[in-house]
Amino acid sequence: MEPIDVFKALSNKTRLNILQWLKEPEKHFPKQGAHLPKEVSYKGGVCVGDIQEKAEASQSTVSHYLNMMQKAGLLESVRYGQWTYYRRNEEAIHQFAEYLKTEV
Image (cartoon, rainbow, N blue to C red):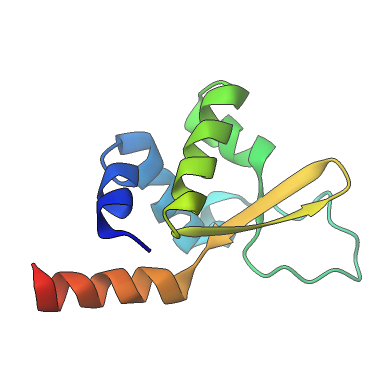
């Protein structure tokens, strides 16, 4: 994880909101998991379409934001069929918080 990439990813209100929403997906995305097979367990994963709907932005914009956040290390994703699910990468977020405490 490059700190500058994380700072860039968090420098947009919608991207910051997405990260905050994914902290408590059950609260912010009540219908999550609608497209995941019952035997699949991807705790906290939220479909791109649900994120797009909540963000009130175009699909291409939200996909770009999610890709940027994933490249920065803030998100993880998994694809099932035609749907991609995202969740926070808590380990990377913790590492970034430690970086802030010790280096900045």
